[in-house]
Image (cartoon, rainbow, N blue to C red; front, side, top):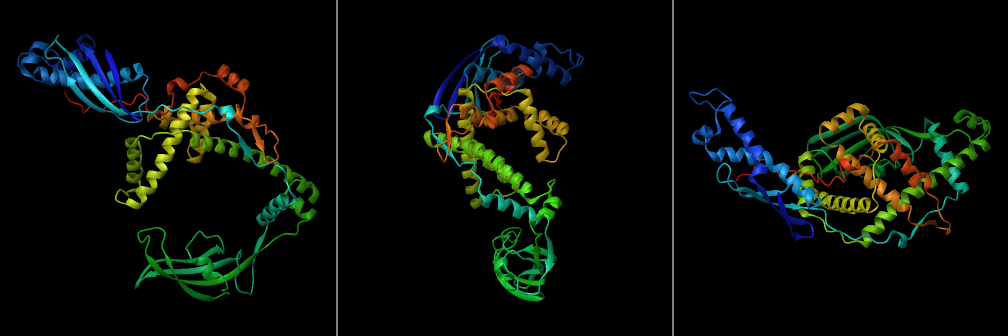
Length: 457
């Protein structure tokens, strides 16, 4: 098999492939066998019809078409591997030549496909990253203590107008014209939450028990999304949260500690732990941001359009042009990040260990509320494991890259992120303990994406 690549633009290539007859012959033999099992020809049993009779009765064209459709995807994958291409979608295949007769000629085809563009990453050691310090103030501790008190607080009714932070039990009815489109009764809502209807916080503020008011709002969801409705709301009860006094008794109620001072000391340690973890998250986000700023990443338009179409089709919103524009922006950004991180993982020779993959899949299964074994099995059956390997590799690439960068806090102190980003010794231990699976999918570039069988000679 011979192959050649022509670059059409930074994100698209044209692959030309020529396959000698001998390489196609196994598929031609299979085509004869398959056709022999399907046709009824007097004097011959099914499956026993000789090739020359099939050529006479069915035609060489049907044989070679069957053979080409059967073999095309394999030859395409082989050519992609030979040319070190990283496709980002399905190719547009055109068969330009087929064997003219048994034993004569060759198969030739072209495939235009979008690929991961070549980009040049900056030197990691030249990147500067500054994150917030882990200094803990009394205000940080007080905020934690306040949250803990709210968890153990109780709601008590009050005989006064409602204010922000109060919990109001409401009856609500929304109408458009003369049509009632929604209603709820006995719902508890905290003023300031902002998670129901626009304008509800303002309408409830100042209402006392059994008082009613009406306001206009634009609906944000459902079949009447974007339409203006008149909403009538009644406050059937106004309650405030009664918080327990922060003392030793509360410490014993809310924790394993005997005194408030001991509880506060533990809360301080919790804040330090949270801020330290936040430093690692911030460092990863800043690194990605700086890499994106430093590198021009061409994005394949076809791959973006395919993802946008899939997204809108799943939501049954293909005709929603406004939403399409929003999804296009998000899809473009996501693909740009993917291309950059795949390149980074390749540059750093990131490998994904079996243990790392399993840990990621178990966490993902929990997010979907599925049994881990069932979740992993469904991914495997759907051929999605390589994509998961790519996800882990991208995340790990940022962690490995951070090892080459000096991260400092706002006070100029060097930040040790080893706990979160690991080190080479940890990677070596992981590699020794389990086989790496990165070779199963260098990235989730769909590098072995095969052409549809619909390609015809």
